[in-house]
Image 1 (cartoon, rainbow, N blue to C red):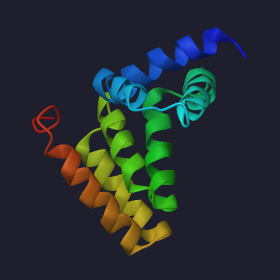
Image 2: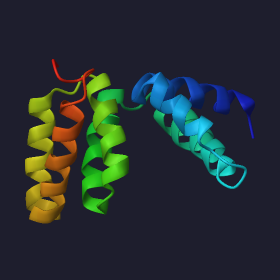
Image 3: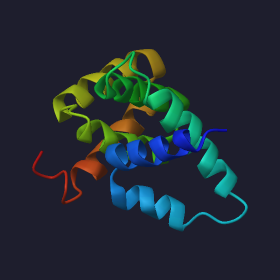
Length: 128
């Protein structure tokens, strides 16, 4: 497996979710879950997120929708931060979540709105 993918994945994840969140994920990894971190960095971030076929903004929109559908609130919060970093507005996030309400259900969308409000209240996103 290419170390270039790991390097790219580290850089890209830090850019999208924020250096502090990226560093915390690595700092909190143990020998048990470090292989998972490296796998995600290489394939998710280094291979897929780095592909030229979609913009980061488009990938973020897709991720928000998928994470709502899957009911993954912790991961959703990470990707709400990333979506804001990638240029998605709060109004666009609102529209994405309203659409997921129709296709994924009211409880899933309700949880998504709750997660978004928590992220929007964070100091670095309160004024965006």
